[in-house]
Length: 74
Image 1: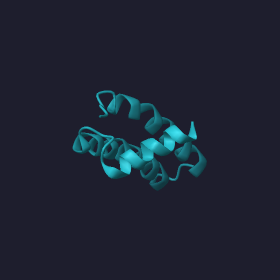
Image 2: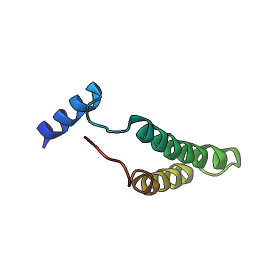
Image 3: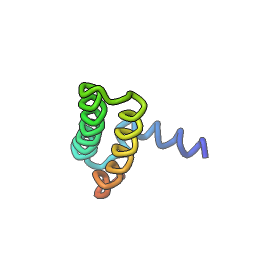
């Protein structure tokens, strides 16, 4: 299992794993931005830190598969 992960990491770092780099980074940035907004805005409204971390983490983890559902690897 670790060998497969290491092989994928090496291909990713060489730029040979992802077919469309722009699409991948665009969708990842959208998901990260949504998660960051869900983390910062409630903190500015004085919500508890533990609650904002849980909500932003769960929401970001939930939307990332939908954002990357058309993601293709080489």
